[in-house]
Image (cartoon, rainbow, N blue to C red; front, side, top):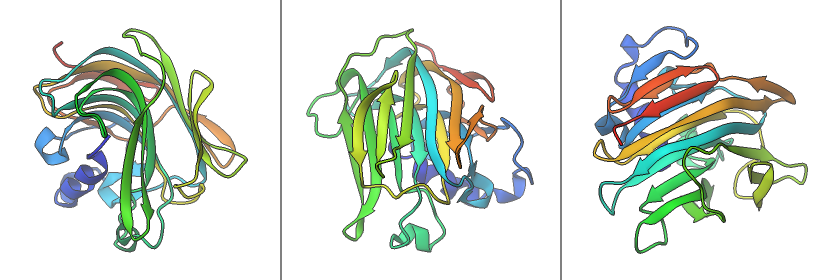
Amino acid sequence: MRTLRYGIPIIFATTLAVMPAQVLANTVVSLSCADAGACYAVITQGRDIPNGVFTLSNLTSATAVQEVFCQRYASDQHVTVTDLWLTTPPDPNGPEYQSLNFQSEWIETGITTGKFQGHATPVPLSFFWARNWWQSGQYNYEERILSGTPSTFVNYTMKIQWSSSGTWAVYRNGNAQVTGIQSQRSPGSHQGLTAGAEMSTSADFNSGEVKQLSDVQSGTTLNGWTGYVYRAAVYDISQNNDHLTYQTQC
């Protein structure tokens, strides 16, 4: 939700020599909470981390069913999240694009509890969406609570989609939650996908599942993701290319 986009490329820049030469389907890679800036258990598509690039093109839609088992934060300054991220094409005017770092422009949606932008006190279990984009000479971040109240052990189908009107939109269970998102660039190159869990530290609690993963590239629907799974040691996981189940002690 907040730091995955920065933490992973930095740490793997120093460990490239020990990574596999070719991305294998659902290869699990350990990533400590300290190295990533938070504790993650995520499955990816098109995030070729060893080479520092995002490999998907003309990505117009991503879908993940999210189910929360337990989310609790250990401190008012902490956050726990079940999430779907879609990286949008980078603005060539941004400095990270110019340094071949294509990770700072994205849309996400999911379920969160804990610290939240614009709220003086932690939020209860809530639907949300967020974005990071380049505008007016800087990268900007915004997150918003969405209507409705999520329940544990209930499936919610989350989708991020490019629309025929030329903007991005966020859906839940087939219903539009946010439309007309103009901050992000249209589908193109250097795109990628991530879904799973984030929590601030190993003292927090976050268990759940992302499943029925799919995306649309160049008009073709693809079911299942075959990229790396990144896992902090605090999580127990089970996974294949259609789901990632992650559990901490709750």
